[in-house]
Length: 349
Image (cartoon, rainbow, N blue to C red; front, side, top):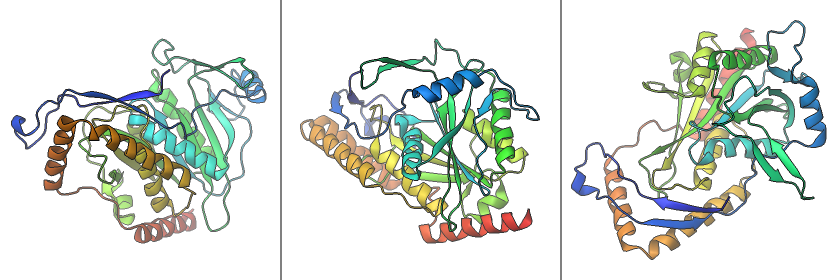
């Protein structure tokens, strides 16, 4: 697949603005994306054998029918980080953030979900690529779990990365909930990204919300008020709320005119907000460099197109008139809030 991506400014309805204010721009521009981030990889030989040998097994004493746990890691009230490709993941901002965190934490795979019952492979297709020796490797869509232990001052982590399923969402959710119960997780943090009215010249907005009103107050987050179609993240958060298991959702807004497969500035924004929320720290130099390069390429393209520049100037003027909503609190305040919450939650167990 070509690494060329386009900036396409589609027809859009702008709430509170007249159609004359935002003409329909026509240009389509190609911008190459630097290949910096880790993409999904094919399983190595050992992982492939493990998956094949366990894919139909059912463990005694467990209700998990489709989740294979190669080992149960010894973790202390871990925090779960979740991201799904697909509907919840504009420009791969959320899934790339989860993969980046997985790499930086040195997380190790310990479980996966059998894909056959949950995917229509004509809609979510397997992926073929060549390895370093030129051999073809096949990767099926699926969902995998990784764990990372951290020093005593920080929580342990479970990172779940996968594709949004096509089928049997209730059964799929039950598998996740049973895993959360087995590991006795202290909190679930989901990452998402959506297309919205934003400019790449402004900081990428990341909003944090919680469905539980007491948790939202305790961590100084918004209470979720969304109504409308939802993805698998919405289903999982509903199940978590019913189970009274704490959960938080972080969503980045990707500028609507960027149609690249990936958007490093949005990925960086998700990582920065996640660090603030969890009080952890990653080396972000790699993704910061990718983000700067991405913005530079956009500006280079814009310099040669007066019509597109004019459109963005009008967009930025309109955005400047709107008050920011749903922002997260300052990092130091939020870290203290969540540490207190996790400590009190542990004491009450």
